Image (tube, rainbow, N blue to C red):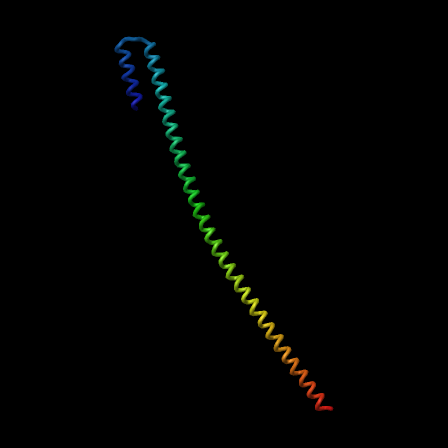
Length: 127
């Protein structure tokens, strides 16, 4: 709107001075150049806004990924701690199983010794 107003003032000024078509053509070219410059500036501003919006979206995505990475790391640490506890429990269970096996063997040996003793006593009694 401002350009149109400036244009009208320029045309009126040229008409008042009575300087013919050459001045009008020069003024028209100047106005066209100014309009092109204004459009280029507007396009550049629009591009800058779009670039800023894109940068903001990328930053938001990066923060989201960073948060997800922190959460994944925390989850991995919990799983690692759980695995360590499970491994420790397995070692305790294995030790308990070995102890129980040793007690079974001991009981078996005691029973075998008692049986052998009984057999020997029977043989003595029979002879």
